Length: 301
Ligand code: CP
Ligand code: NVA
Image (tube, rainbow, N blue to C red):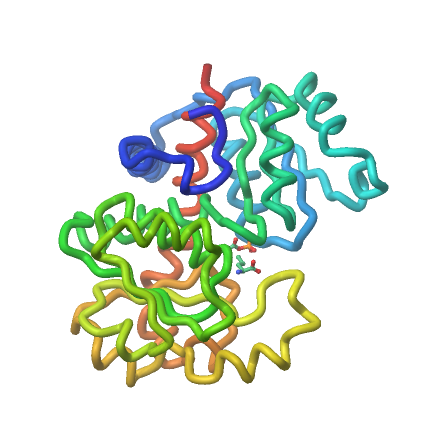
């Protein structure tokens, strides 16, 4: 494993290895056991979109590993004024030991990996959010002990989260059902992958998808960069909500997760959100541990 660009690139063994290391690093942090695996290393963090969790968890995580994180806003970098990503990659490779990037196009992340010669970590693109899904898998395993026999149901937009969850959950052996409106389905590349699994289903009916689910997940109806479509999307996604009606058809002990930020009373009711705040905020915390594991796997050489 040289980079973390998208879930499609990871083998099941690589995913499980990252999750095992994430559990260990979480234990070490909680017990005050030093884990300076990245002493003296530097991570550049390029942000072309806003962030709370990704920025703070990478920055803190790098510090806890003994390394040094550099926050690089695209507004301040020459990349924001049109310097090609190919050149940025070749320059930054000479200063840094790794780059985390949050941007729009997946191609930009793939180009950084192709033209640079240091590990690249995708901190969210329009296509995927692998760091979040590794944290989600870590959280599911923490609450349910194993992935065996579990069904994950995603309700809403076939966006970066849906794309990554479908692939990640199928790779660790879970059953996956997706409910999204026509016209807002996951990427074709992801559907092509998922259609190879008998335990994958896609429907436009949230109730159908949620039946017997062990884990229910949703995300915002409008992602970053889709601000001009908000009103249109509110109409398209009406009814694609995790609420009591959906919870009633899921397993009685079903977990609910959300990558955050959440829009209460849109994709999830306040009541369900607060009833499952325990899982949702553990999921947010696990970003820190899962990303530390990714950085150690990629950069501790
Ligand atoms: N879930 C997530 O990636 O949050 P941020 O946008 O705050 O980084
Ligand atoms: N789908 C959301 C996820 C935010 C963490 C977005 O891309 O804005």
